[in-house]
Image 1 (tube, rainbow, N blue to C red):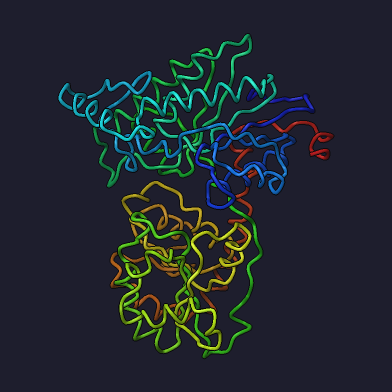
Image 2: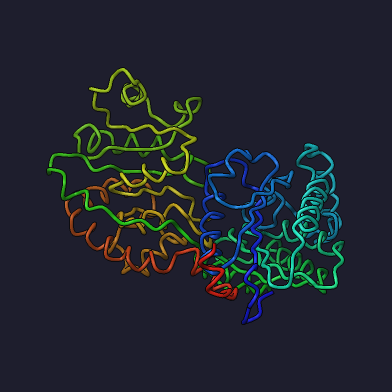
Length: 458
């Protein structure tokens, strides 16, 4: 299905992501961008989601939706940095790697896991969903199948399903990896077994074939280090024209620091209160900056320090519209369009991400900021820092920090040189827009363009 020519004007692309459960979030955003790229290549896309996806939203996506998968968050059982597995698995998630004590420990953990999170059950459910999907979809030779969010555990489920699928025409599946295997350039035993598990899954899937890809060069290198061949491809992001907002404000107006995405552990949730305390007096109270973030109503006290509690109440009180708060509090479940409109109001993008978790992992939010021409502040020694270096180094389109106590001084520098910094960021945004499109991702994966007549019809 990756042949260089494709004359079938009815060619389709099946995109699979069991993590898609609602009409927001980056899993769906990724799928939408890949589907746009598929259409530009001439394919008719079908999106396979979690069973809980609201079919009422299908009309908004303008594509065929199949809600078939029961499990989600398969990477919880990964051997990578985001997963909890101790040893390599085979078949129906049977522990086979490492030593007998570790295998025995893994078996105990598996047995004690909640029923819906039991690894054997998740493998079976994912495989059943895939087989039902494929049997209903009835793939032909020119069609493409893409697993949007893959890891070693998903590969186990995919291989289990492919071994059960019998057809005179073997399937060809592409799978995209996103999450790091190891940190600090230390190849761990778990990382080596990650590679062994993936390669064994690919081998066991024959005569069907699986092509692997990674969303960062550093992740591709990590996979190569453990024996897995996965070519790097650009992570797609929504294209938008940057807005010269600084030309429309006077010097006394605050710059908006925007921290997008729900606060999670790997995104610096536990650092937010400390940072807000550090920048309250020098910047927020003096109207130099305004801080905007997404907060759930039941977790705000954990994120907002006590000295900013009045500011929080003023920000969420709809009856105090005339009160200017140094905080902007945004809903935790913004619909997609509103989320992107909110991103468009940023003057500075701030990232408190854990550099260990993001050593080889792409951040879609960072790409969104860069495509919009927004200066950014990122942690050093991770993928986010790599993007600053490619763009010209520290100070070109933003700054990097080693510890969060360095951030206040960086904000002072940004405030003093904002216009020039924003100009450079906007010029570099043109480069990012061309590179990080769904069409370019599909192209870099080697998928053929179908004939022009179908492209126009789609």
